[in-house]
Length: 132
Image (cartoon, rainbow, N blue to C red):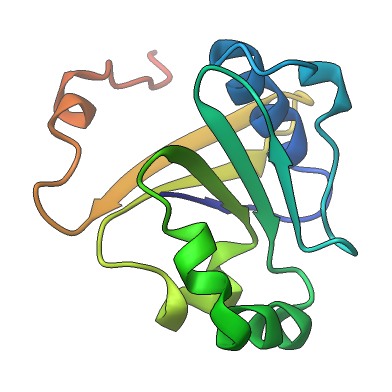
């Protein structure tokens, strides 16, 4: 499960579109914000389930009606935008990805992991920083 954090316009949906390309979903250009639909599934060799918690009360109803089982499908890559709004409903094992808009119109991306066994490859990511 991937939990995306970031303000409006930070690039969350664009990142999910890139994940869709990486997963070879059938139509990665069709990946769009599921804010009003709540969840959109994209077919491919590995399914991409894209959820949005921007409207947490609406998503909470979906989750209470059995949506948790759907979102926690181990046969899919599940990405939840605005996941901090439903943090209590998220599983124990989550890769948290925060996107922050930078002054140069770029983005700063931060990763954090919760749960066990975690995401050991995070330790191998290069640390980026400004020098000088």
